[in-house]
Length: 405
Image 1 (cartoon, rainbow, N blue to C red):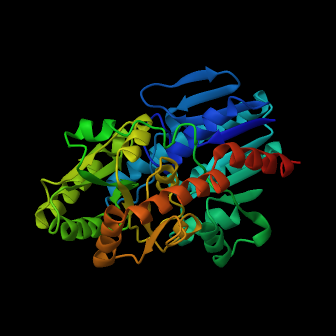
Image 2 (cartoon, rainbow, N blue to C red):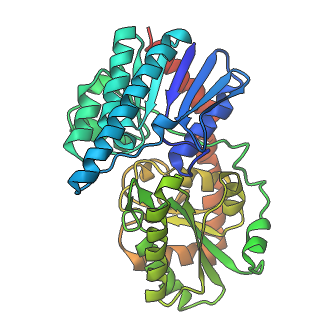
Image 3 (cartoon, one colour):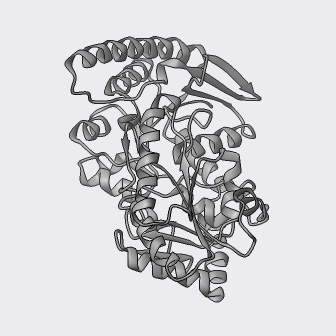
């Protein structure tokens, strides 16, 4: 099988759940029969990197985010850029797919991560070449155009990262025969309770007796900040309540780094987040940092509790990563999170936008060693049973191969 995976999110350019998934796929594919091709955005220059049977093509035509602009003049310039890059994308695929005898193509989050023309182009090429095309959804559809891209094109199947996303697609009119759920998974050789637990507090200049509440999230969705949607404003409110009763606790927010072209928006979101720490008077006890992707296991392992009180979450890659490192977790009862966390079994589920409840649950884990140990033990079991990439990815590729004929 010669499989092509196209993603506008690259672990070599930015940090987030999709990027981690792509990295996990690249690592996994190196040990599998067949040839695997990845087309990812270029960081600085276009190049091809070969790792055994995995070929990574870094292309500038993916260095493009879709943004609705109000300015007519800017919009005209933007439209020309989108048109030129879309044509370049089409011409590349039109040659690449037959040249490498591609047997199946998977497009990652195309309804959201790229202009609509890209979905049309990849559909046109695959349809004319009679190559099965799969759409993998990491995000909910949020407007009629995105829904039409999902429902109206020639995707062989739509792979959803959670039952919540699958249900959303079904509710919005996609035929049930076109929908399947494929969880993202975590590499338990990389995310493990055996990870160095001392690095983080030493790196942050904290004492070993200090307690660290950690949250990890991207703070941009395209060009807009998603601080409220990810529950980070609510988390700061909850933390201020905890900090008023104890002096040994710190909040670490590990923010996912976006592509360089979004630096201006990223800095604005950071300043907004820092502004909320000042409103609550907790700026000296909140640490907001970006970490390299390879350091995240040590970030989780060195913390005492993980919390991300999102208003909406399609899956929650960070929860399974934290669990795999032996960290108790707290999430909200929304989206795909309840597919990972069973309340009071392997973590706490709280209601979104309830800072008092969140503060209470965090404090419970920090103060009750029995509950903490139960959540850690059951979290590790959950990951091993349901979210190990070594179990999930063979099932994924078997599914793709079965439906490619």
